[in-house]
Image 1 (cartoon, rainbow, N blue to C red):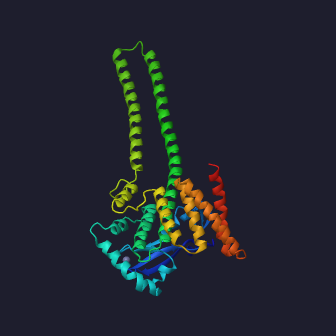
Image 2: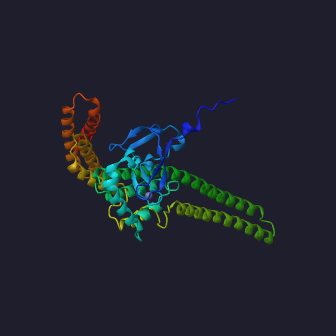
Image 3: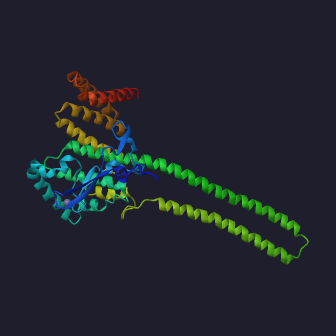
Length: 371
Ligand SMILES: [Zn+2]
């Protein structure tokens, strides 16, 4: 008898939660990834996890960012899914000082005829549109963060940066997929077309041979046979037309439809008409992340967070093509990092991030200097 070593519990990489929505009271079921669900194999310079190794390969196409935000399925109130949110009922400051104002403002927007929260919330369908749903959940999270009387610029920046990561991953996957599948399809189409041309040549040859053979025969027989050849030729030509039609069908099917919009970008444009801070692509998301990291840097007092923020400001500047700001912020990061390392020389844990950021800044600063 075979022994099943992997039970279903080991393969299920999710934790399940039931949490009451602070705004409308609905008890939502959320799922979050277990801590050991995957390990990171590679990161981008802005800390985006680039390559993941999943404990269960079934999930290899899942982006963990889809579960970063928790969105109420009834009123669409959205928060980062962390311990603070899970334990909001124990958080007196949130309940007394923040929640009444957030609830009032959130419900007011939700009730509006042309409510942006409702439009975005209704478009979230993770099974059908995982990338789009992840982006939209971050947008809702940004709306609700803005409704908080103590809105954190640092959080807004982090959410926009994650939207940029989602766009980046999508472009990378599309490039890879389109290149492979287009190459494959083209190859097959070309081989079918080639066989069709080959058949045409062979049939022409056959026709010449037959005509030679029929030289002495009656004209009526010759006409019948010649008609039959033109029928074959017509069929071969119609095969070429059918192939063209098939190609156009595939191209049409490949155009993505998102709700009533032609594509997701159109849906974002539509939202942008009422809310300017809706990013349409990675660059716009990075620009918004930059804006809020900059605000956060100016207000932040903690040195270790300042180092992280100034590094991200440098990396983002570099990515959006503002090389002068990139140099300035890398330089600032190196100064702050050096200062931090000297102050906490004996604390390896405390200095680990500063050390990493310092190394990254040095190498990026050096490559910018050579430009
Ligand atoms: Zn709710």
